[in-house]
Structure formats: structure tokens, C-alpha cells
Amino acid sequence: MLTIRRAAERGHANHGWLDSFHTFSFANYYDPAHMGFGALRVINDDRIAAGRGFGTHGHRDMEIITYVLDGAIAHKDSMGSGSEIQPGNVQRMSAGRGVMHSEFNPRPDAETHMLQIWIEPNVTGIAPEYEERAFSDEQKRGRLQALVTGDGADGSMTIHQDARLYAGLFDGDESASLPLAAGRRAWVHVARGSVTVNGAALNAGDAVAITDAASVEVAGGKDAEVLVFDLA
Image (cartoon, rainbow, N blue to C red; front, side):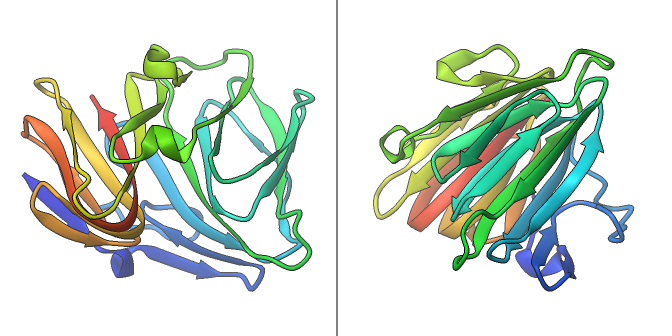
């Protein structure tokens, strides 16, 4: 079964320096029909103005994944981690029993476009963790590359949940198939471009929930960048 969530149906908040679309309920956007999907709790599609960002703030007991589409984001946290995350680099942070961090667009003349993803963990109160890894376009071209998983498979980073996040780039005749084990479901988010997922035509910002299916089928892309979540 497919349930499509169109880009225009998402929550929206424009703070001037931050223009954000919320796939699921977040901050002042509340929709009881969209509180998350399995362990997937947040997908925020954020555009951050040059030289602006999120000041120091705290998180706990959440797996946080940052996926930069354009520009860069400068990260600093109370664990002593600090880096400038650019397209191709993916950050995962296990907030655990508590972490403070900040995120800023370091570019003086360019907007940053990124996805902020939260996945609920299967353990709480652990020591916070930070990890960053580069995934090239070649790794994602015409296939679904694992970025984060519960077991570190296929060169992915490890999160504390039985969930897998893949990314792929699709154009022209490129296609990919991701088998879904019995009882599992998928959420597919189109970060940019257009693509067909299990026969459904999707554009940038659109998403589809897939349940009771044997696989996720991605095809017919036009400059598409796609994130696929395999969830219990």
C-alpha cells in the first residue's frame, strides 16, 4: 500500500533566516495524523540564510542525522566535536543522556539547504556519540547506498535503532530495487528532482509511505536525489 505525502501538505515555518518544511509534527506545527512513521520522527527540510543558524541548544535520547544538499553547516558540540558538513558528508549524532550543540551556515553569501532527520533510539541514557562520513556521488549513482543502519552494514554509520537509511541519485534509465523483509515498511523522501517510486510519480519534497510491499522500486528519475528509510 502507498500513502503519498505531497510537499505542499507539510508544515511550514518561515523565520526569515530559516525557511523550514516539516514532514512530521515539529515545534509549532502539530498534526496528529503525522506524528512520525515507525521510529522515524522528524524530517525537516531547512534553508538557512548566509551567516545564520541555530545557537547552542540541547538534545537527549534521539538519533540525529544531518544531510546537506547545498552549501555547508558548521557543527560544534559539548563532546568537543566540530566540523563543516558539506554535500556528500553525512553526520549522525546519538544525543544519548544529553548533548549541547550549535549549527550555523558558515558561508557569508550563500544559503544552506539541508535535511535534519530524527530517529527515535531503542536505548536511552547512553553516552552521546558523534560520527561523520563521506559518501560520494559514485556510491549513490543509480543505486541505494546505506548511510546509517543498526548494524553498520555496507559501509554505513551505526545508529541505535533497527532502522536503515539509504540515499540514491537517479536520472534517465537508472533504477534500483530495495527488498523489504516481511513486516517491515518504508518511507521514501524525494530531496530534489522527480522520480517514480513503486509506480507513484513524486517531485521534490514529496514522500510516500510503503507498507505491505515486497520491495521499494525507484525508477524514472530526473536529476533526483532520494532518501529511503527501511523501518520495523
